[in-house]
Length: 314
Ligand code: FO1
Image 1 (tube, protein in one colour):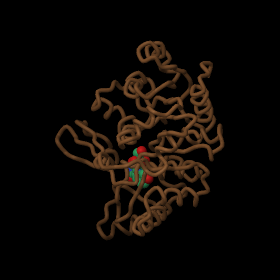
Image 2: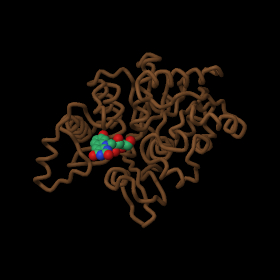
Image 3: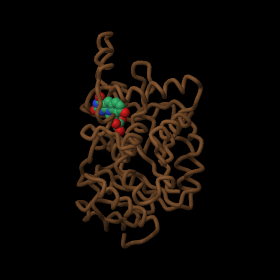
Image 4: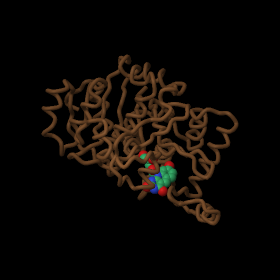
């Protein structure tokens, strides 16, 4: 079983490649749920939904979140009642949130509902929320505001400078059923090119997950989400400094150093490879990590897996 720790869009692109290298049924994604929020009384799980829609081939191709062929009739009608549009839920997307909320109200845990939604989209990949417990990633801005991650990322376009990030509820959260077992039984453990602070970091913040990775006999290989000192997408450049990490493939490798056996970086960062290997004792492979199409994502996944197997010439 190949187990991947995953956030949203970067992870979804990587997983689309991974399922072309190994059978999807041999892939388990442990997915961040700190982005989850309630909108119009509905439970929205952006990272789980992005991965589901990407793997099901129904993602909105330009937005890279939400559904293709989407309409916003309900959202515009909701504005009539004063419901804001700052976090837009399309009509097709709403069906997922209506179903998820109904099942949660019936007492089903998020992990069970997630499996039902994955099955409804005919996914063979196993999707696990990092936890079934309520957690929320919150951002404290330097001007003292305490925002939900989505209020920061979407509502404020990640403009404010950030003083701190925390995962509310983490201490009381338990890994979702199957998460620790998947990690313990994995043949390879992959850290997707997701935000190290609010995606991978929030998964690792769930008690027991980091320990399970350290205890697992499987090699751990990560893919740098930072290329050429820049984020590929998102706001990791605003958040890495809050955890004292340099915004570079080296800075993120240091953040994961206690977990990693191998690190995949982009060709633009080739010069960093010897430093990362010397300083952190990691096997580093340099390749194209810009997953503009599924072929690149497939080769990247192949490279990460071969690094897991210890093939230097990945
Ligand atoms: N991102 C935006 O920039 N604007 C939106 O209005 C928006 C709505 C939205 C609705 C559902 C969903 O699953 C994701 C949505 N996103 C939107 C993206 C979301 O903020 C990110 O996908 C993740 O939270 C970050 O990985």
